[in-house]
Image 1 (cartoon, rainbow, N blue to C red):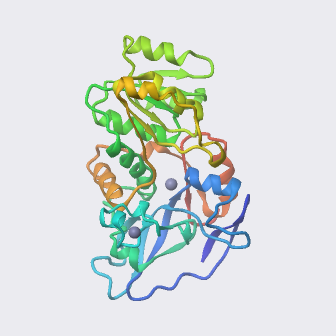
Image 2: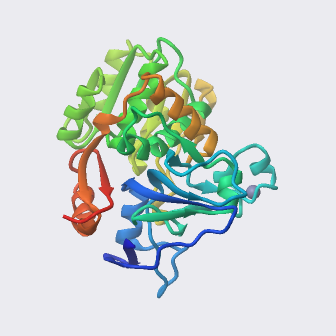
Image 3: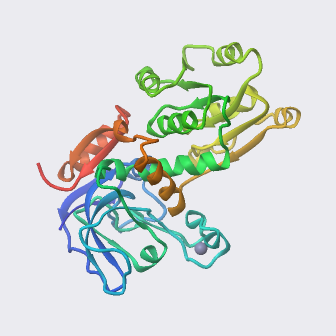
Length: 350
Ligand SMILES: [Zn+2]
Ligand SMILES: [Zn+2]
């Protein structure tokens, strides 16, 4: 089959590899769409500890496709089914897994890293993933591209569960990349009265506005603190989400939070720059709640899929670029430039 194989930093090759074989408890899916994630871009640029030098892997953990084969011991999954894959697989036995938090399992593996992922014609869904319900059927009217980005939205859903917006809240969002836009959708759905977006890229601010952000501020050229305090009559934001890898955003957030405000450090910081200076008296006197969140589990994917199926959330406009799989390099380079929102690869040649 055709696959885009990651060999190392900036070395991605479109080549022929053996089609995966499945046993009687596994499922083979023909990939129809796989989205590029920020994690994939980081791996492309800097490598990853799970990919030792000299090994190679087929990336792609945001994927949807069609079941072509299901082992005879597999229940309820049949060839022809249109599905999306929840990529994170846990051991199934540890405390986190018993809670359904496969993404927090110490032994967790993901389809797309280190297991072969969706940047290929076919992907094998291992037994454990099948057992854990990772193969989710999608409705007929949901495109494969939309289903491929259910997973990143599921990460946003996870963040929302840990740190939700209440009806009437003023939300301050740092970062208007695809994930930031998904946070706009989620908090708007929950009834946020106002969404303030801080970003350094004007193009992305314009996009945020088109998705319903109320107040836009370029934090490089404008005075964010002044705007937030003006807009909230000196009260500050009820919910703050940092959807960008910025120390500055993380340090600013407690200052701009309202009394009893909540903060989610959603975007991680670079490994060598993950310490910040924090005035904890702000947390103390304002009684703030600060949390983080990362990744998603199958339950989060299922919840988002239900929101998509019911039409409450429409992720179609998030997919702004599509490339055939043989143009993987161009696709990655384009995604790296941060133009538009999500880039999706469609197996095939052009
Ligand atoms: Zn991802
Ligand atoms: Zn586990």
